[in-house]
Amino acid sequence: MAVKKRHRLSVKAVMSFFCSLALCSFVAGITISSRQNIEKLQVEQLILEKTIRINDVISKLLYRANSLATMVVQGNGVVENFDIVAPTIANDPAILNVLVAPGGVVSNVYPLTDGNDAVLGWDFFSNNPGNLEAIAAMDSGTILLGGPFRSAQGSEVLVGRMPVYIDTPLEKNKLWGLVSVTLRFPDALDNADLGILSSRGLAYELWRINPDTNERQVIATNYEFARTDAHFTEKHVPVINANWYLKVWLTYAWYNHPENLALIIAGFLISLLVFFVMQNNYELKKMRTVLEDIVKTDPLTGIFNRRHFMEISYMNTERERRQNGECYIVLFDLDRFKKINDTYGHVVGDYVLIEVSSRVKAMIRPYDLFARYGGEEFIIYASQADKKDIFEMTERIRLALFNNEFKNNEVSFSVSASFGIACINDYDIGKAIVNADKALYKAKENGRNNTVFWDVNY
Image (cartoon, one colour):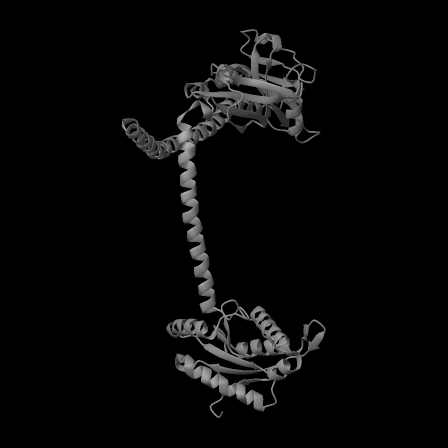
């Protein structure tokens, strides 16, 4: 008896445990999901900031070559003020040297210390490391980033090569040579503060395709943090017409966090709930749209029905009253439509009604109202036009119906219509419809297939 009791208590305990676990998983999942989403956004923002920062730091240093180019152009190709201009350009600790190379051969370099004198006489058209970027800069006509590579001084450097063009008596915009700014590497990246990625627990790799070897070259990295199985994000870093790439890994995998199991369970449950709610809302909206269409449109032709036409027409007429504008009712009826039904059947008759609706809808203005008034009778509400415009529009519709045969399978026949037009005087739409109907019957009396404007004598 006691054993049986303990067994019952065990079942209750297990059930209570699982209920508690489900509740805790839900709460923990929401918390972890929010934290991870925030962290992901922060990482994305940090990577974007670093790509912008790398480009900004390198660009600001290398664009100092513009001052050297200006000096050459102002001197008409004669380098006289190099010793004055160069110290003001090379005043950043990251700059190793600045130089000028008329015809591609280095003639002046500053400073001459730190082994920089070794580059005097260097020919940028030779097959030395980094010269491909110099040649590419000449070909492109713009400044181009080269490196990192080992320089003549024996250190790793980045260089900005900028072609200079001058006007001579014999030739306009002639290539004079190159000016260059050489940066110490990796010192040039210090202000980009890539170390913040390591402090955030992120592994990174800054790389490029080396133009000398056409192979992948790692520019900077913190491989001690790297995980080959972790998710990574990679962004393009355009730097002075060169293409670098920043690749960043998260240094943890999802399975390293036991609470992610709770996140998956909670996420699944929430996803189901959201799915059912959203699906229910979608079905309700879809049903409401269908019901609205049923209320507004004629089920056969798809145009407005009589009820909705009257509702919209009354609102439009009130607007025209405030603006003191003219508006008209055009009522038309298909001639001898019963004969079409009797001769070809109601299926062909329905086809005619659909085709008439399609043709008329294509010919009226977007803001005109068009509806099936009943049976084979249709109605148009037109505004912002005078009597002549309305008559011409109606005649175009009449001719479009009569002059273009209706074809259904092997059956081909003509359809005509009689039209009655009435101005909505005193903005009384009901009276205007009655007048248009009188004009329509006058058109029938005149032999059908014509248009009649309502007159007081009808």
